[in-house]
Image (cartoon, rainbow, N blue to C red; front, side, top):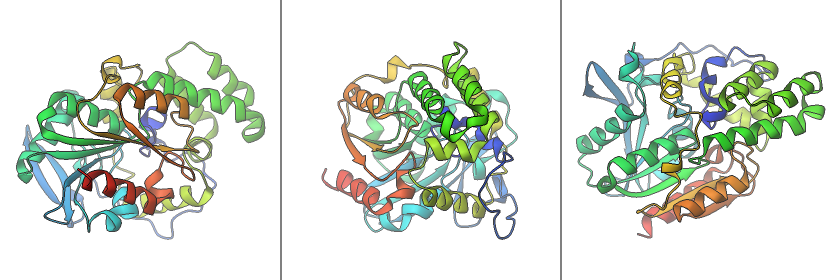
Length: 334
């Protein structure tokens, strides 16, 4: 899956077998899960047999920015490929695969996964790096992790950058279902009645969006909700294929978040004014959250919003230069 708003795409990381119109990669890349990760990063043991993959790159005297991917269960590879070279001259970038994900995969027990151990991993990484305070950037579900980290460790956060995220996951999922129902007669005529029935259903939103993925396939559905252009989707798929990380088993990660109630909730505790400077990034052509809901979240946080007119959910893929400029402006003006 991709970081899509996890909420909407979530464990779909496990759904890469769904039919897709995209051409296959030129050559298969072996899976590189857990300790099989490439040598360009480092590992941090955080206890209980768990170690994390992370990579620090860029300006050693710049502000420290930690990127938290979405999913849950995705990875930091595509983000680094898309904007790493644009950000690193200005900031000290920290790329992290969260516990149980990709290069930080391990054969986990349920109690080793979930929100609480994940945010404590971030704090241990901060201490390990010797950083007094962090700028924390969360994309999609990673924004939820960023908000929870700031709640748990406010003294450790200099500022937040929330990319295509909200605390009201239920509303985001309902928006996706309604969008699919409205577009279905043209985009998915054979499945239109089923998609419209899912939008009307009172079942849990997360289960309904998973059913929608099963009906039409991951790539066609994400093209409707997540990407502004075919080229943007193709670029992200290419990086995912070359990463060798998409075969890593992220199912237990999402299952744990789901069991803990993190994926089907309005999270009112996270929709309150924030005590640190916060910038919200919105893709004008994204249908993962919806412009109205994203604006509502920003108001709840007392946050500034930066809109990207030619982007969907993956702003850093579709408008990398503008995205990087907004990041640098935010962290350097403080």
